[in-house]
Image (cartoon, rainbow, N blue to C red; front, top):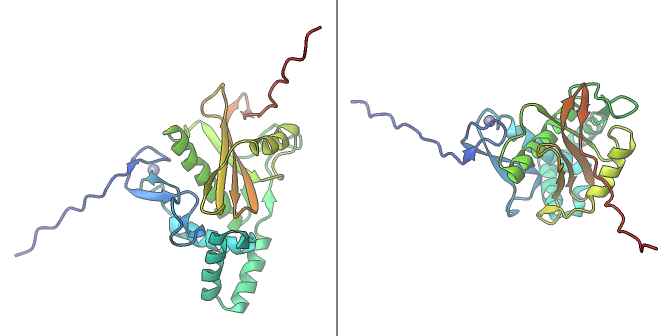
Length: 245
Ligand SMILES: [Zn+2]
């Protein structure tokens, strides 16, 4: 007689941070592969299996990237780097690093003026596309952590390397201003993140992610209005009133 099959009921951690379906997996944002084993409080969000797809490849990718990013400045970076080096011989390492660096050039889809959106999203070539996906997930995941809801479908998420985004004053200013906000830090600085939300639209936001205290990326959630992407400009606070005469 056959044993009755057990129906496997998977645990639901909460609604999927990306699509709102039941989240039966933990999706780490950023991928946990970039941290040393045992690093406490590695951030994660609930995700459905579909949205969590590719997580292990993202892990491996981030591990390897840690070597290119001068990750020796943090404990996590050192631990991850050593793990990879053990798994690769010297020739493999050289080839890997060459390919990675070559593939990380930025393809900018913004107009020269900087304010008009020309493409779907900013993209990096080849392996860089994976990095763009990882960064977008970090923004979407943290958006959920902060607001308890996914980024609504009509909003775009974009990321770019600090200082290499669209030209134009507001982008440079945003990069500078975000440093005034207190970051949330994981480990001894392997990952940190800061954010500001628009006071006028609760879904428009600016983010700054830093990896291994070395490489920073900006992230935006924006909305298209009349063919333009509306994004948050962080302004200097109004100067205090001077003495009246
Ligand atoms: Zn999902």
